[in-house]
Image 1 (cartoon, rainbow, N blue to C red):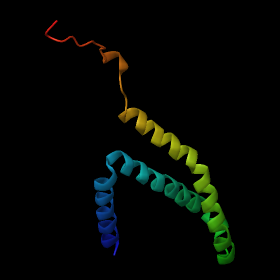
Image 2 (cartoon, rainbow, N blue to C red; image 1 turned 60 degrees about the vertical axis):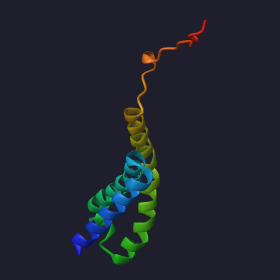
Image 3 (cartoon, rainbow, N blue to C red; image 1 turned 180 degrees about the vertical axis):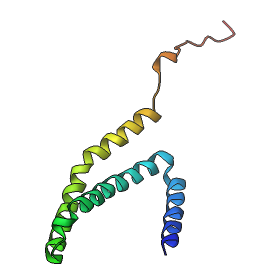
Length: 105
């Protein structure tokens, strides 16, 4: 079942890269992966305290996930801006401005 999940995710990623390009697909993956990893890390660390009672765990899972997602938006924005700056680095010093002169003159 895990292989089927990864197969479907791989097909979706290939299709998404085809549709929007490498940079936009990578940005989308970062938007999904970073908050997910932070939510998983929080649940691993705080799971012993939060999930002793199933009721407390269910009531606290959604608000903490939303809080962590909102808190991770600046980090995701920083990573996406860093990728934009690394990939779209244009060096203006190599641009030469010239005038064209016709051959008849």
